[in-house]
Image (cartoon, rainbow, N blue to C red; front, side, top):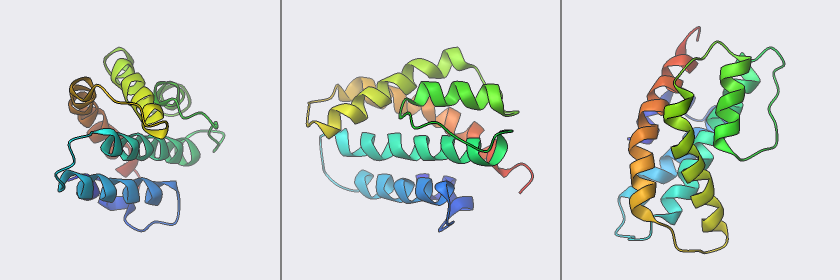
Length: 138
């Protein structure tokens, strides 16, 4: 599902291509019987982070992105520095949840998977908006 959504970046030699690679890994993870959602979360966070940074690199006036891994901060920059507009109030809390979950994965902490999956549902809407924005002018 995610690899198909990010198909426009398939094997691209840029951050968009890296986002697509993480989308492939999410699709692989979804086909397993792993109960722990942490691996899914790690790749989901990376997919969003790299897509955000790709958009900042290709669509912002400065063509640059910060080192932060905080997804809510990256979305704020995209809204500020590009023509992309969305409801930041709707998407900021789930972006924070995914960022925190991905950090927990790195340290092998248990995640609240129910909260994480709810965030994924909300962020799938944002992902569709971002993909549509990325396709403009390509």
